[in-house]
Image (tube, rainbow, N blue to C red; front, side):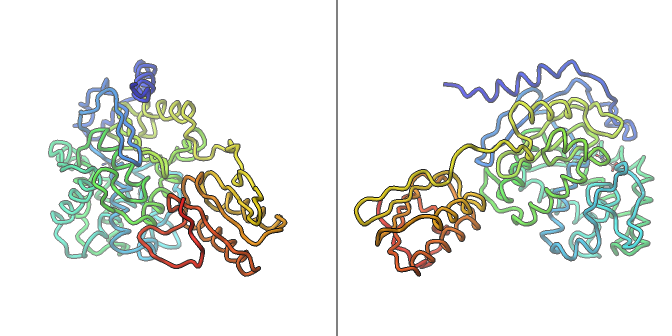
Length: 414
Ligand SMILES: NC(=O)CC[C@H](N)C(=O)O
């Protein structure tokens, strides 16, 4: 049997191939020469399965899609507090290349617009780090996210350098405001090099899947980014990833995303998928025309909008049976806050005409930290009331991975 996922993606590709509106970015001469027919879609799951269709081995430059990853590198390096004193997390409602700064704090609004991304680049490593070292650090960091050695497109780099007056102006403004201390020119040059790192859509989707997977690269298993850093990056992508189109994008598509003027769009569905779409023609806001269409359809057809309120129709307590002196409570589904709340409320309601309670987790598929704690709290309370509590947990759902903690509960063999 061949999985139909690739066919779904191919259908999306074919349906949108003829939508050839928009213009290639012309302010970077090298990007204006891109082949406008190029079109590819890729998807990587958090388990590391990649599906791709169309031009999936053509390389293009990350451009602004480098911004979330550079922000992640800076957060990893300096922590959230240090970073938020210097770069905000509010949507700017302005174009990506606006020379803007928050009035009361002297910070760029967010790290997804150029002025914020230049600040982030300037904050990487030490203030006297040579520009070349910062570039190499990021190139290597991006390579770990992609799981292969990435390189810089020298033609795109030089081409942008020649027309980068606005970005240089931002660099000098930031330096003037002491957002960073390094030399403004070198920092902007470094930022332009960061934008010129080349990927194909498969790489892009793998990099996205790493963010989606709490920072663990799904192929290499390496924890490249801390989970809280990944959460911070995704949160900012929601409010600012598509610049002044971010609100409409989120309402229509509902997937945290970041676009770049090369025509790529990176999408990240937390805990599920990394997505990459590439086609060079852009709308007036600098977002790929075909990319937007594909993401809208993908979100609709595959139910990927993260604000979908379709409730899953199962109950966390599957059955309660009394067998002799034992009350057997069978749970199911995922154990997180809401399901744990449902279980605890039922444990509260139950009449215990027994001495033993057995909690059967055989049908619980997974648990997060909060779900685990809440259930254990409930079970401890039952013990305090004099009941003998045992757990049937053949998949060790309730045990923290690699931890031999003693939770005082009797584990039954399955
Ligand atoms: N939106 C983008 O992709 C912009 C990135 C580009 N390198 C710039 O600074 O203008």
